[in-house]
Structures are given as C-alpha cells and as structure tokens.
Image (cartoon, rainbow, N blue to C red; front, side, top):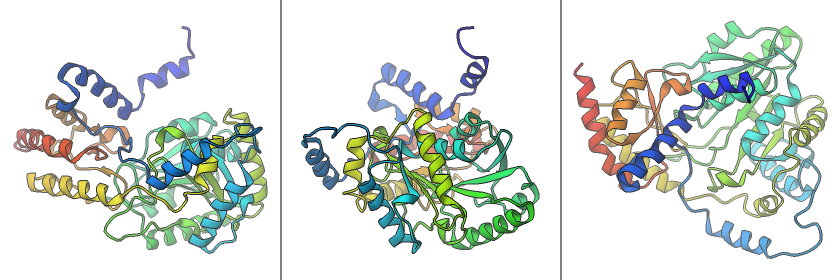
Length: 395
C-alpha cells in the first residue's frame, strides 16, 4: 500500500461535510448548478466588507525589502498588539502581545495548542454534536478524544462531564456559537462549567484547560451577544479565525490567545510559538496579518444571514420539522423525521438537496443545513424539504 494504513482508514471515515460537497459537484455537472440546492459546506458567500477590500488593496501595493518575508513565528508584533488591545477591551483582562500568536486559521491554532499541551494518552473532552475535524486534530498529537453528549437543548451536560473527568483529562474543547447547532452558550452555563473545571483541576492536581473555538463569535442574531469563557475560568485558551465574520475562509488567518490569568502562560506561548514553526505553518500569512490589524472591528453584514435564517426556520417549522432556532452561525440542526438520519439525507439528495447527516457530527437523528446560500436557493429548495418530510413523517 503506497499510503499509511492509518490514513487509509481515516479516508474511509472522511468528513460527511466534504462527502456531500463532492456529491454536489457531481450533481451540478449533471443537472446544472442552479438546479442543485447545496447546503453542505460552511463556505461564507457574503462579500468581505468594503473596508477590508480597501485595506487589502493598500497593503498589497506596498513595496520594500522583506515585506513578504519571514517575521517572528508568533506573528508581527504590531498585529499581536492590535489583537491584544481588542481582547483587553472585550474581556477586561490584561492581554498584551505576549499572549497572542497569529495562526493559519482556527484549525492551525487548535493544532498548535494541542501539540503544545498534550502528552501521549492525554484526554480531550468534546461536547457532541461537534465539528468532526476535531477528532483528527486530537489524534494528530496523540491525544484521546472523550465524547460528552450535550443536553437536549444542545448545552454541555455538566453532570456527564463531572462523572467522566479524571486524572488523564487535559482539556475540554467547546465551540460557541456552535457548529452545527447555532447555539450560544449562556453565561450561567459557562459559570458552572468554569466552577466544575476549577474544582476538578484542584482535585487532580493539574490544570484542565478550557479550549474555546470561536470563529462565529460575531455572527449572532436577535440582539444577542457572544459570551466569552474568559470571564468565567482562568485557564482558558481561545482559538479563532476571521474566516466567517470577514468571509476569508481561504486566506487562513486567525489567532491563538492564552489568558493572562493562566499561571506560567509564557511557557504555553513559548511552546505554541515553537509548535507553530515545527508543524510547518512557520507563521501566519504576512499580507493578511498586515490587513487584519486594520479591520479588527469590521464584519460582514450579519443581517443578511439572519434574514435567511428566518426564511428557512419559519418554513421548516410550518412544514412540521422540529428545529431549534439558531442564535448564531449560519447553521441549522433540525431533527430528522425518522431515526435514520443518513437515509433521510439520501432522500433529500433525490430532490437535489444536499445537507449533512447529524451522524457526521456525532448526533444521529438530526441533519445540518448550512444557510450561507442565496435566498433563491433556500426558497427553491423548500418544496423538496416538504415533499420528503411528508413522505417519511407518515411512516
């Protein structure tokens, strides 16, 4: 076999998200792109803000020695200062550039921090449903994933965590606003989670880190606000990107932020800076770092996503689907009218509707709809959603 047996096995269990996306490519060639309703991939379709375009053009036109060269592995100091200033205003904590590492997106940030803190066999807890690539990130660095199922309203089950956390637990990884549910973790949940992790850290004799993956923190609806866990637990580390709020998914720019309340946070930053290099990222893209520091307060027009959410949510509820209204992100996670979510997703596919089964997010019986698509696509797909629902809801 020309490839490793481990990767060969991983390929057979590759992401349902990508699998459905690739199915969409085939169907679009067969039926025409306008006749396939692709809700599979969370690829932001809104244009980047005008101020981003202006700053990008300005920075791209600059000339000089080393303007596209290496910089410190943690990133340009001035960019890290801008990010730390933003986090200091948001959290009230004394962030400085020494708490920040610029990374190749949130995925890069998570891989860097996991490489930095994990010993072989250390456990990382994840709340299901969750973004399935987390499994691979943990395995990359010889960690062990431990799954904790969320409550029926998609919040962490603190009793389950309390029972399962043990001396091998190194971190708990959370994602709010959540992919795939759209749920925002409220302050009372984060407070209780912080209290639990503090008590468990003291009882087992080493800190349990709270890793917060937060690339959707600006995509929130109905006047709600993203609530950061930084205020509720001192051993918090943030991983995020600008992929969603600035529509920069392909530019791979994000950052890792280590709370200044963590004892010896400098050791973590030093390790993560080293890992940023040895994992092959070297540094985050130079041009994007220079742009980002000037547009940190910008965002796409979130009201467009909210309007799409409302159209889709109201229509699905009227049809009869059981679905929680997303508080953020551009995802919806309805219940399948039958227990076999994969079978139901395949039935939708016959109507040229592409969604992702909940099984791919470790929550069977649901399916994810990514509504970063046009209103026309949503409206044209509704007939198919209704026809398939009626077919299976009578069984």
